[in-house]
Each structure stands twice: as structure tokens, then as C-alpha cells.
Image 1 (cartoon, rainbow, N blue to C red):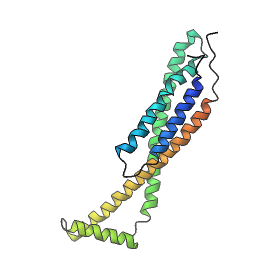
Image 2 (image 1 turned 90 degrees about the vertical axis):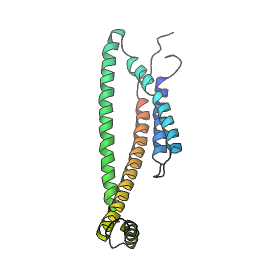
Image 3 (image 1 turned 180 degrees about the horizontal axis):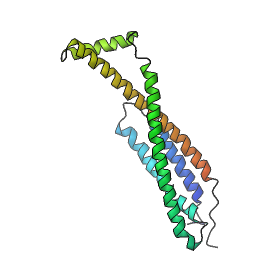
Image 4 (image 1 turned 90 degrees about the horizontal axis):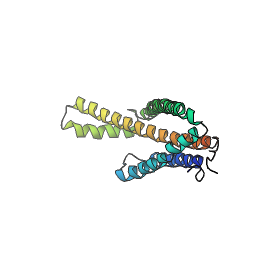
Length: 186
């Protein structure tokens, strides 16, 4: 295996494929369907298959036999720490992006805006059959606020997936800095 296939190329291909799937996911809309998500997830799973095993080969190839056990333990530790950092990064950025988009979108929701007045008026009429006038107004405003939150979350995911595209591209470049695996066979 080592003499025929370059693990650096496999890992690079894996990160580029993973980046392509994140790019597909960054292009989704609020009317997303399963037909939009399944190809991106299949591509993501395909790319992940090209990352972990060849990455293990790259990291363990320069170790002597007696160092393999320690190397495996350190690699698992680093993978767990990296996963935790990645989850924290994604969670933090998702919240920050959603907050930034919410501030931007909420700035366009004003009682002075004619489009907002029309939307609230239409929703208020819709809710007036079930609620008092004051409650109908409150429900109309809440409905618009929920739409703002949905849009803010949507744009946060778009931004995050686009960031992940760049992270995957950077990882693909960093992998090229790894030493070539030396063949153990003549």
C-alpha cells in the first residue's frame, strides 16, 4: 500500500472533497429539500473516507515499531482535542453569525417602514379572527420576529459552511507539508 499510493494525495483529495460538500451546503436556501442535502452529505462522507486512514498512515509512518503504541495514543488524544476545539469553534461562530445577522435584519424592521406596516397589518387581520386586536398585533409582531430569527440562522449557517470551505482548503495545503511516506518494501 505505502509504495503504490501517496497518503498525502489521498488526504488532500479528502479535504478538497469535504470542502466541495461544504460549498454545496453553503448554497442551500430556506426551501431546502432532501434532494439538496443528500448529495452534499454523500460527498462529505466520501471525502471523510479519504482523510482518516491515510492520515494515520502519514502520522505513524516515521515511527519505530516500539513507538507505535505511544504514537497511536497521542494521535487519538490530538484527534479528540481537535474535535472538541472544532465543535466549540462551530458552535461559537454559529451563535456569533446569527447575532450579527439578527442585528442587521432587525434594523430593517421598523414601524416607519411601509413594507413592515403592510406585513404587520396583513398578519394582524389574519390573527384577529382568533385573538383580540391587541393580541393579534402582538402575534403579528412575534411572527415577523420569528421570521427574522429564521433568516438570521439561515445566513449564519451559510457563513459557517463558507468558512469551512476555506478551512478545508487550508488543511489540504497543510497536508502537502507532511513528509513523504517512506516505502518499507524494496
